[in-house]
Length: 563
Image (cartoon, rainbow, N blue to C red; front, side, top):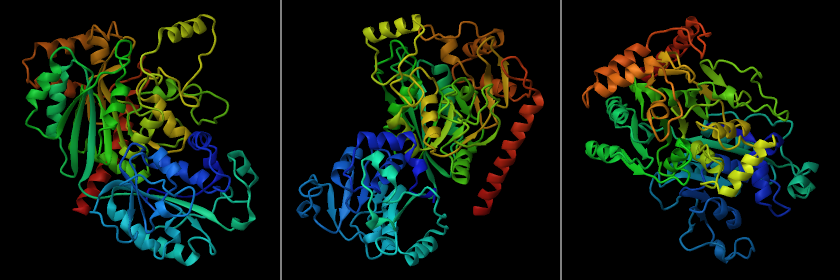
């Protein structure tokens, strides 16, 4: 059980709920659905093969989930109901008892049911069948009531089956008699005032867990080879890993060279993309959006082609943190949360206006934190929802910006006028490292984030922070390899003497010689003062490293006990 909540008005004020209802006006007697449908959309990606149990109305189902199939004991196409009759496409409706659906185990990545199982003779048996058919996630909403819904006796049985305690009703629970319903086009009705709506999300805990690694790449064989070789060497027996290399139309032969060199490894999958904004934006985030469309695994890690794992648990440990704390994301916040923090008065963000040094630990959604593209682990369902809703891309949706729009933007800047934000209420285009997607997760309360901080490094560049980054002894990241070394995409003009020294060592080394990489990793392990001006004391980094190492040891102890 990863989420269990009553339908409430606090959720109704979240942007995802508001936007969904604005774009999908419902008939005036759908008061429960104004919460239930956005809840489902926040938990299950749209572009996926999923199973609906109970016959969700087709005008909502196939708009929100175009590849969905439904199960119902009735032939809904023959039902004398205007919202069902002849609305079901061929092959999209399975007529079956919901407790014995004629499909193989794990037939779908996601199954869901919207206010249906409480009307069936044996809701627990239906839920058990949904769990059997789902590889990754089950989402259920239901009416709870002694008259029309799950009774108190049945809720007690549900608690026993799931091994959880249903939370107390919040003061702002959704009801059929609330005047606020009018804001969403719904009529108040006294007939159903006794009904409350319960939502739940259940995620698989099977072993081995499936993990996708998204690895954007552009013309960097020098780093790509050791990156992939060390990922191969650090594969974890408790994970079923696949690496998706996302090539940004490299023109130097590195893509072809990598495909040939790693051709014998079926778990490295090479993909090449042509971005519409390639000519004016080094948009790694858009590659991640493309890559997420390919992912079938339960979890996904996003990292860079100049990043290298240091221990076998570099992925399994973040998954453990996700499951332990209910995180939406685990990874490195390099301080982008301060640089891009929203200062609007409509949000009472915890983060102070002066910013802060992101330390190790759990951050509530009110804090606004930003796990970086270079090291981020997420449940695939949430990553794909964020990608579909807002995108990890730094670009404004729409690809190459027309010349007229570019001129108008330049004119607004010259006049000192604010630029319109097509992503409103989220952060605008131009935000790097998936910041807008991070903001989407926080502003919609999708789950806290856990920061794995940078704890040591090789050296500092004059203006662009640390390079040779060591993230808690879990991952080494050289950093700035494209931005400082590429002619076409160069954004860092002076990376400094220390940076250039290590680049020179890499270029002098024979292809496949790992000694320079080993030397860099060793150099990155030394604690020293940090921050752009070295104002963060050495002791701070030592303490943060110690905190993560204690958690890592706790994880390892639990793993041994399980074995």
